[in-house]
Each structure stands twice: as structure tokens, then as C-alpha cells.
Image (cartoon, rainbow, N blue to C red; front, side, top):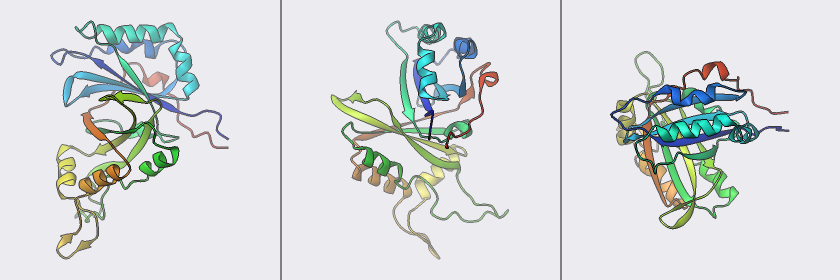
Length: 250
């Protein structure tokens, strides 16, 4: 049985894009008895004034315990003070990806796609969404070196937000997809050229993979989605706090 269930937190905060992100604002994460698998941060390419702090916690219990500490209060104060907008509050979202170490490939050119569904979506349909065929090659041609010409570092993974939120007056629940592109050029290549179906002498046949993926999301009841890109980097001092991830399956 599982004695702990891993959870990740995604905290959005603001830093003017003309200013560097001062790594010292994350110092509370590297102090005290806090333990986690990984802590990373970066700017959103599409909205440079917005930043993200990502933490993969050993368990929900560990995160809840951290929230009661002085370090957590100081961290939130630091994140709020990083912006010149006194009304801007850091916003944290908990996302459950199950027992998957999805953060291991977080680095440059990560695309995060948030897909919103009615909050009434059933657990069964949530599982069905996770089984939708993601943005992966149908059959990648072989490169001269003999390796698969994949445009990504690993297959995308999907998780679900722990709590619902209000979007345009409607209660919604977010699914979050992580895409690990090799670089922007490969992402564009995939999204404009990769097709579903099989390879023939005339090339791949069928709809664009991106269109098929979006169609499947709509079929499952998706209301809308929004994506952003981020280049993740380690929180200063966090590596010494990291714990090895070992799935707790007994």
C-alpha cells in the first residue's frame, strides 16, 4: 500500500521583466527541515513579467506541514515583495501527477498546457483524459545515425489540479500537460508536420497530431486551454535539500 502520495505545487508570482529574478527570495525553501524532490523556477516566455516556482513534494503531508512554518510565510512574503504591484498575490496550485517523476526532464523549452474541464468531470473521465493520445510521433523516421528522430525529450505527462477554480464565471477543474520539447524548432516542426495515421510512400497520412489531440480534448468536454513555455532552473541551495524519488509501492 502507499503510505504517502506525492504532490507538486505551482506558485505563480510576478517580477518585472526588466529585472532579474533574485534567487535569494527562495531562501526559505533551502532552510529548516523542509524536504522535497525538486524545486525549480523560471519566467513564462509568453508573459515575461510572470514567474513560476515549482516544487515536487515527497507527500501532501510534507507540503501541509511546510505551510504551517515560518519559512512558508517568509517565502510568500518574498514572492510578493518581488513585484512592484502591491495588489499582486502569489497564487499556488496543487497538481497531482500520481507517482511519476515528471520533473526529471524539466529544463529548457518545457511547454505547460493547462486544459479546463467542468469541475463536475468524473474520476473515470479524468482517467480517460490522461489516456488521450498525446503529442507523440506516430512513427518517427530514422536519422542517419540510426536513432529515432523524435522532437521531444520524453513523452508528455498529464496531471490534475487538486482544487477547482472559477473561469469566466464557471467552476472548472484543470488538467495539466507537460511537454518536453528538444527546442523551439522541433516543437514547431512537430506541430506543423506530424500527422496521425500511418507512414506511406507519400509520407504520413491523417490529420495533424495537434488537431487530433485538441479534437480528443473537446470530445472529453474541454472548455478551453492555454499554454506557456518556460526554461526551468534549480532554486539556489535546493539541491542539497533534494531527496531521491523512490515510488512507495508495497
